[in-house]
Image (cartoon, rainbow, N blue to C red; front, side, top):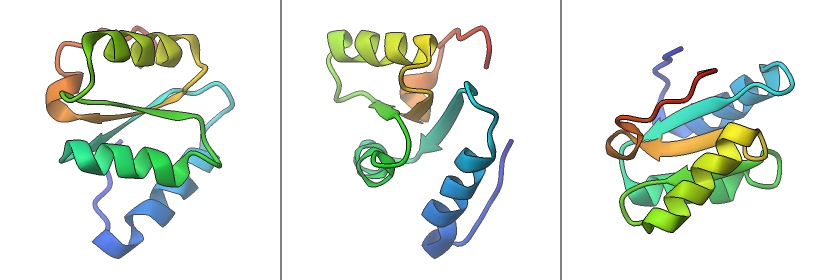
Length: 92
């Protein structure tokens, strides 16, 4: 699913989309920068279990985030496109 919205409406629209998902659904949100990934996770964390993955994370941190995502403990993965390349997640 891809949707283009004005910058000032992005977070509000993302939260609407996340609320509309079936319980247990997993979602990957792509951001253009590592900083944006971290900021988005911080801003939605009180309503959604989300985690960021990008090139500034250590391999251990990336492995942990992916295991949390795969298990459903953090069903929202916020990633840069580079960090998400090559990910094999069966139910996405």
